[in-house]
Amino acid sequence: MEYRRLRRNKAIRSYIRETVLTLEDFIYPLFVTEGENKKEEIPSMPGQYRFSMDTLLKEVQELVQLNIQGVLLFGVADKKDAFGTGAYCEENMIARAIKALKKEFPKLYIVADVCLCEYTDHGHCGVLCGTEVDNEKTLPLLAKASVSYAKAGADLIAPSDMMDGRVDYIRKALNEKGYEHIPIMAYSAKYCSAFYGPFREAANSAPQFGDRKSYQMDPANRKEALKETQKDIAEGADIVMVKPAMPYLDILWQVKQMVNVPVCVYQVSGEYAMIKAAEKMGWIDGKKAAMESLIGLKRAGADMIISYFAKDFAKGLLKEE
Ligand code: PBG
Image (tube, protein in one colour):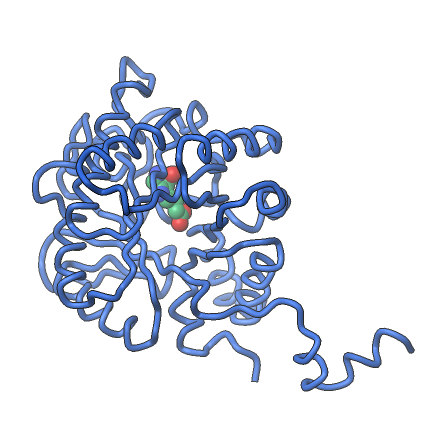
């Protein structure tokens, strides 16, 4: 017996534990929809809902009471068009939600995801030229959305579209409008992943034709992730992100070793759905599996974790007795 000496009971195990998750590590994603008095459960994401503005305020009240510090907002738009106008028009739904939340909960840290796919009728993350996503035409629209969220009171702007040069473009637009103090968290190593499936059901944002392979990263590539991340930092990203989480722990680890800015990881909808589904089947202990995956993310270097499990964590449901 050698290593087992320090595993003999709970106390010694916790004394020597190297990685500890805290509630301050988490950001909780929320889906906001039009209408009133709506709280619709997302079928492939049990325990996650689409909230209308009124029920959103109630939900966030509970989150604040649970000491969750930050939320990440996504819009589920009714009206969509080719240009994703809903993402940046005057009084777009996310800007309205941010305003309402900031008024009620001034200390809540609000992260605004910036992308067009929840607002385009074709479901792509930018505007099209023929059947291709047009990088240069998309940049001003992303910048417009970013400025409108900053104006509404967002604390952090998080572009998830994967257009080239967007961090630089958004940084300049924010500075020009007087939002130099608002940081950018870039979805830098964002892979083209099957694990976004449940999110696309939730936001009704699946591409209507083709796929996202021409802008999101090939899961087979590692060096490219490092280059993307360095480029985003050079363009002014304050925080970088790796997404999804569990299949990309090697990327997370390497990015963390390489950069001097905080690193965020996004445990995406499909990762959540997998654990929930297996738990429902009685095939795994979902709470323990969730905790183990989250610990893995922190151990691999995450400074911040976006996870649909944040609320369960805050309630103490994931902790071992
Ligand atoms: C928008 C966006 C997506 C996710 C976050 N922002 C969907 C996508 O890129 O298709 C996915 C998050 C999740 O699966 O939980 N581009």
